[in-house]
Image 1: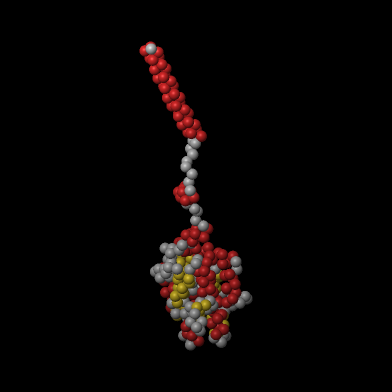
Image 2: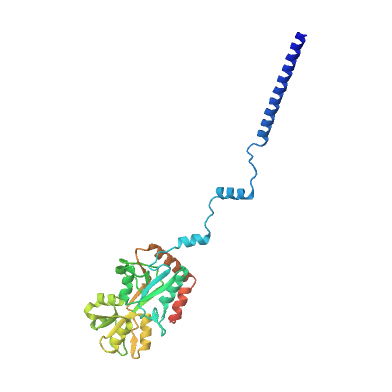
Length: 299
């Protein structure tokens, strides 16, 4: 009996071990199966989790075209948000004042269109011509437009935009005068202070033959009063002045031909590039010529 019980106990013990081994084997198989079937899988995410994941993994969005343009055209100006133009508003038809005290003229309208393209408000500061030039070099204005001619001496102290029109220096004389370009140096010449007319006449005939005035109208008054014998000034304002003063005429022969451009500080190349870009567009679409034609009748 004791032997049978021992064998039976061994059998029971062996059966228990086999069952335990089978259970372990089954558990291992299930684990391997789950690992194989679910490799790399993650728990489902709700919409909020997916949104957060996308925000974390999606590269920053590229700035829109408008944002890029705004960044590229961001300009530093004397007065934030404004394009300040110094001028001498006594130089018709390029710049002048109306009866209401507003500004008008070729330069005024072109400057307004440039400011519009740059997203700035045009501000005009009226002063003497030489002060208008100095305002740019001293950082008091962003640009000077006053029928400004491009000259090497001016290029040393300021940058110039591309030319937007051509200026011609002419000589105003009393009707019946014997003055010609050949004998101009024998007479007293009136000019506007700091203009190329003054510079050319001083260089050609000496400063003792030239008297400078604050503006063209004052020079014409001096001519009418016999204080000077003639006046050298740009052709466009010369025509206006002669039309307003009977008894005066313009010599047929041109004295000097030159380019008009916008003067700007050498310390702001970004503004120069922006103004040139805007000016090129305004010339290409005919805006500049239309403004000039509005004030100067085709000959």
